[in-house]
Image (tube, rainbow, N blue to C red):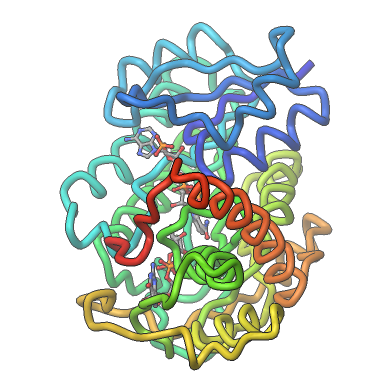
Length: 343
Ligand code: NAP
Ligand code: G4F
């Protein structure tokens, strides 16, 4: 039985990746940050389904290199997936030092632990299309230049480079997955796709009136997170370590995403979507479009879910959630707090 350690197991990708690995017979270990409230809601279903030692959670933080090193010693994993990050680009402008510390220290701490203890452990770094900066309309691949435009993206460039440096200097099996945006019903609610689909669900159920977004003209290459975690796993099964782009090869604007999501429930987005400077960024990544032909050729990976299917999956789930919220509101057990989110 293979053992995997996942940092950031409580996040969107942590859920889909741990589900995939558990279904494939892995013993999965994940790091959880201590918080005043329990923050495992995304993986609660897995915790309850895998109670016989298949899934173990450990308190840790990417800023605590001693805890990471000690976990690696105790668990002796075959594979480590470094998914943890302060992953919100807009928040990274407000918390630049913290975002940089988490984005940079985590990767080098884990790599250093692998180098000094067990060089056969395979390492996956969650790199990001944000590193490219989005100034070109060209399809971006593994050779395209980086031009980071946020503290988040700059920290990801460091982690990406240090992963390559450890691979080349110490012959470690370390890979960078340069993933373009990937979404799901597990997506954090302040990322734009989920902010839109949550609003669609609530507006359809009559418990929200409008949604206020930022730059509607930004364009992204959006895929389904469930497809992308398969690519992460495939990278660590490949014969040789390298860097791979995962993307759909299609980019649409925020406006177009909103239009499709509202249209799916027979509503006209123009009646419900507003734009405010409040959600604009100091430096915007205008356009991202990826070319994942290397991953297709070498890993046999390709996205399975179209943008229309992704929107359907997300809106359907968010209508169910809004339905449950409506029942609670009608019984005076819940107060709506979603009209003015912070990001
Ligand atoms: P996410 O939902 O925001 O999850 C981030 C995870 O990191 C959460 O488990 C979070 O814990 C954890 N975390 C945050 N700060 C931490 C710290 N100081 N120490 C330990 N854990 C910490 O992000 P995601 O969408 O799953 O993305 C996974 C990774 O891929 C991230 O590194 C992200 O930057 C990268 N990425 C994502 C995309 C995308 O489109 N989703 C694209 C490219 C790259 P809490 O639950 O306690 O907050
Ligand atoms: O959903 P977003 O916040 O995602 P963003 O900035 O592209 O970052 C995500 O994808 C990256 C991969 O490229 C990851 F590395 C990163 O961790 C994260 O998962 O914003 C997408 C676009 C931006 O251009 C933003 O300005 O949507 C625009 N936008 C318009 N209105 C908005 C809003 N973004 C947010 N979060 N909220 C809005 O109201």
